[in-house]
Image: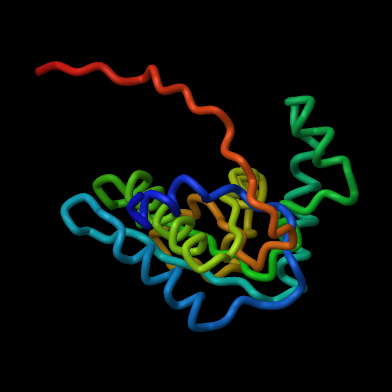
Length: 184
């Protein structure tokens, strides 16, 4: 099987990371993969904020958890009320992907960049997880300004990166293959 397809099929969301920072070389390659994502009209409307400061990561975890605890959705409220929950799963690196809001398709472009970064990380045996719950942090007034996200950009999602704590190969959940129709 093609190596790229193997990596795509083997990538799993990792929520348990070993201590220790990923190398700068690996980080640069992951970011470069994001930069090379497809983009509408080549606008490249993304910005990447890399956070490796433990105090800031802990702050993001705390503020996210506090806001989640106020949710009307029971499972989100329960998760946010758990003092042990860390939205970044103790990963040593968090990349926040923001989109330039005047971009033609900035959300889709940022999603493509995120997917490229997830696949690039897996190809280097670096664990990653796409963090949708970070929206609880992004929605809090004044918090994104602390992250020095450029004016005109909106944080989209975050991705946690680090070396996998569990090296066992995870089996992919069964996929629904009945999702295609052909018009020829």
